[in-house]
Image 1: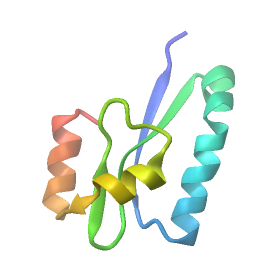
Image 2: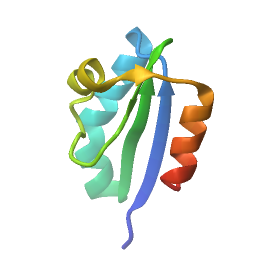
Image 3: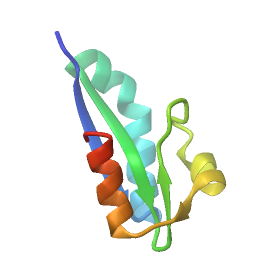
Image 4: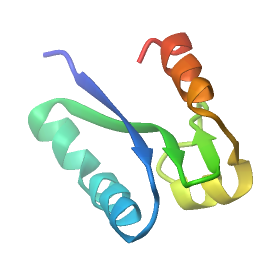
Length: 86
């Protein structure tokens, strides 16, 4: 059975956004094994910075965001999504 990939671009990592990410990260094994669904956050933003997922940088979003987030525009988000075929 093939795995369905769901890519979520998250705008806002305040209390609600960060809780959502953490809950999904904790539930990923269940979704993958029981439902054949892979949930991903290829882009995570706050009001001024964005983290764009790179290979090998998964499930450590807080550290990755703090180290690798860069200023962004909406065009950057759109370009990334199109380039990655998300």
